[in-house]
Length: 328
Image 1: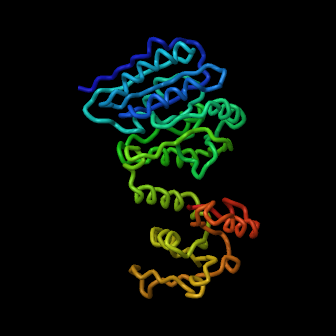
Image 2: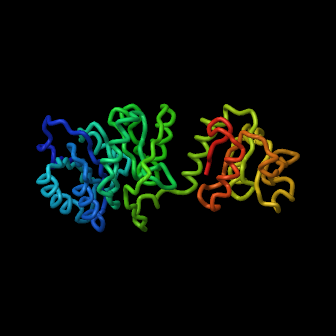
Image 3: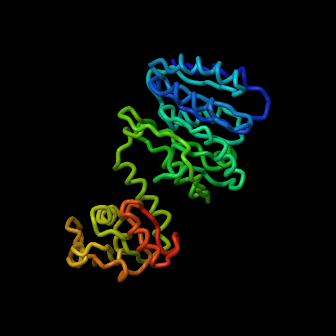
């Protein structure tokens, strides 16, 4: 039988809490001490709460949580602990939603149990959040998807909750797309805010790359491509060709060219989609980027060419969202 446990609820009183750290936990014993220590070490001076939801852990996670609960509460940080004891975990999306539901802060600071926050994280993100109420806040780095999200409870309630599909579901990506659909923005705090652990047991390994790709292509076709009657794919290499093949037939017909800087690809002159059911098979021209016309769907990863790609893009004096979108 599924049993829900809320060990810290008695500590929830009516005192105003400015923000809640949202911490889903599943078999996090190797990293949990350092994670919870990083909560204790925050230099933020406002009222804090830690909301933990234990997703049927089978290790010593609960014992570690109980140990740190006393330390955190002695330091003035309220701790709310919930969980369930069913035979198997219900997934990150479910755990985040439960941790949010049992919390009370006006702002939500998301933390994974295998990561460590820098002492300045909450303070800096809260300062940014007061200026941008409909935004999700991240630290510097190559991605705006978890794990450094920080947003108001009101905005989360407007966008959320997280999808609860269980293992293999990219709940953070799906929430982010819904956030954008609702008109939300992204504000980046350009400082080191968190130590992210990448290890074999990380939940991210349960999500197939093809699943992520499918969601990304769907969002591109839903949000960007309906505005354009034609477009150019910037990258005639593997990623650009894969995107072309992944599009619906109607959107493939909108692709007027690939563009690139690779002389060998440009010299070839075209890309032929050999697996197409159309006859004759589509042959899409390959042009130098300066000879191509916008709008562009850009399939070139940033920060990988020593700034060369970024400078090429800037030289065209285009406006993001109007003349181009980044896919990679």
